Image (cartoon, rainbow, N blue to C red):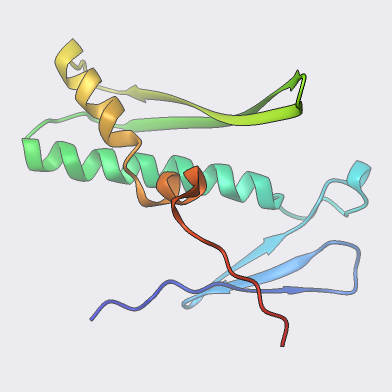
Length: 135
């Protein structure tokens, strides 16, 4: 039986520096100096962008492997865009996906569809409910 993914984050008393543990891995989170942090690590948003990009790349590799497609190296650049609308600031994520090997137009279309099916992308598209409880 697969273990349910869990992350534990503890915010230190030093500005916004936080320490996170996931399984037997460790990460540090912080904010830039201009936001009140010490810039010791990526921000939560940068980790989110990294999670999306890595999930998309892994999902594409898994799909391509099942199809027998050699994509070579997969690069996913994810960045946040925002625009001012009549309803306020609207944010969205943009992905730029490239492959080391040539892919056909048909493969590109299918891979674009598959990219949107990665579990992290589905979570942030609002398909996962987040419940908060203070103990």
